[in-house]
Length: 447
Image 1 (cartoon, rainbow, N blue to C red):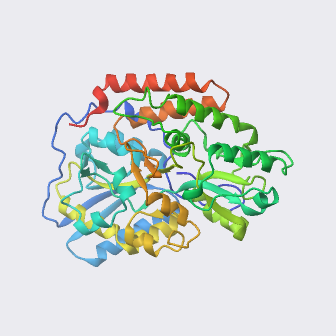
Image 2 (cartoon, rainbow, N blue to C red):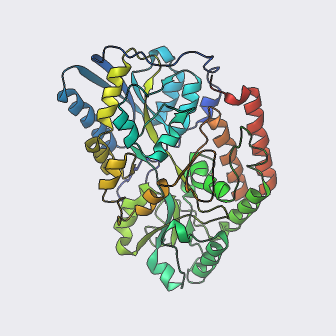
Image 3 (cartoon, rainbow, N blue to C red):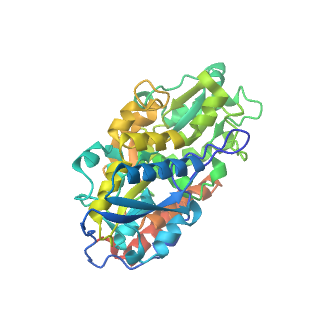
């Protein structure tokens, strides 16, 4: 989870877990063709529920939802276990499938690995048709493998560029208002130059470097450059030829050329303090930024490198343990958890984008005319993880059990490029390492 620091209240708005996913890559030997459908069961009795313990307001929202569920009916009792976020993914990875709970939360990109290792069951047939149809297309894209849904989320993530209108206006910089008029990469470069001319230290851009580029933030925040350039992290099970394509190499050279404009932002407050005009980050910084800038705050799409502007998507989701003997009760609980009251309370607690159509329509932040409508608009044009055309915007990180290797190798390459390495060499090295891992693991095909 990414958090805001410094003098502003700790925003702690969940978007993605900055967990070391690499530990997953080595786990287990795959599903081996086992049936991972949870037993339907009686639909009554006690069910176990595991969740990550994020910020206090999120934990409270979840605890309230569980209490409310238990008091709303007498047939099912949900028992919630909160596990510290830093240990959460490691705990699921280390726990045998037979010992996992009936219902569990997971960080979106880890899902395929858990399916591969027979730890998650499809939720289809357990949750109601209404719950499935009310899920946004973007969140469904994150949770789907071969037409089966293994995860549904209460919230999704928004990614873009926050702008200080006062500083942009002072530098005479015109800025986009929607994805339809996003800056090209060249226009963005010119904007940085113009802003530098009015800035005392010439550092006008924050890219949330304090999170660490060689982490999940590096992949979530900057793989949109790869997709916007017309490449991909993976295509048809291979990284070579798409991650290291000439268009992506060129885009990464452009990204590298922006470094002189970047403020290291060690305290996380460069934008809120007015030190920089632009901040490349997600929805979770909105409360602190809105409080600091008020009406001077604008939300912009990321630059377009030729294949349309792109944004990351995906966040924590909920699924059913493959060994559950009571899938019916688990589904009933998820139906309740994903209702408007609970999704509304959770997204109020963490500021994230509601991942159900009905809650999204009611959201003060994300509805039409809301201050963060851009993030909702981007998610309303989902690409999925493979067919990334110029007409879609929100891209799902590759839904594959090999994702931990992909993110580790890409973020390492990104970090080294940012540090001055040759983009072509860094991307080719990453692509080779990803492809070698996929070959060693038979393409991570889920039986």
